[in-house]
Image (tube, rainbow, N blue to C red; front, side, top):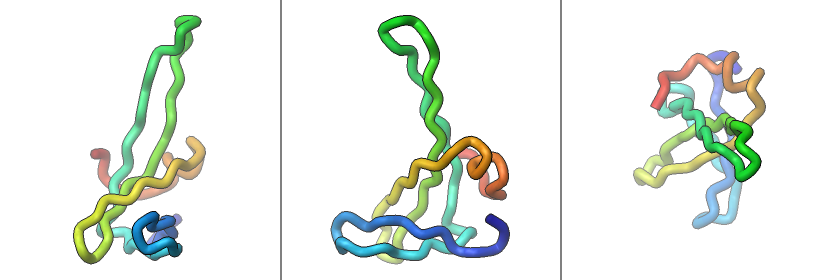
Amino acid sequence: MTAMAVSFYDVKAKAMVEVPDNKLKKTKYERTTKSGSKQVRYALRGETSDGRKLTKFVNQQTWESTNAPME
């Protein structure tokens, strides 16, 4: 994903929306499961033109290849 918009599903608008790269941030959610192992989820966070936050979960390879700042 280089120099392009990312598609997010906007729950309020019930439609797919495009968020430009300059409004993207990367985040990583880490948690410890009941069995003690560590689970990591990778996500891209975007913002709509009216300021609502959107989250899209992606695989690790996509997350690492995205050129966006960490949140």
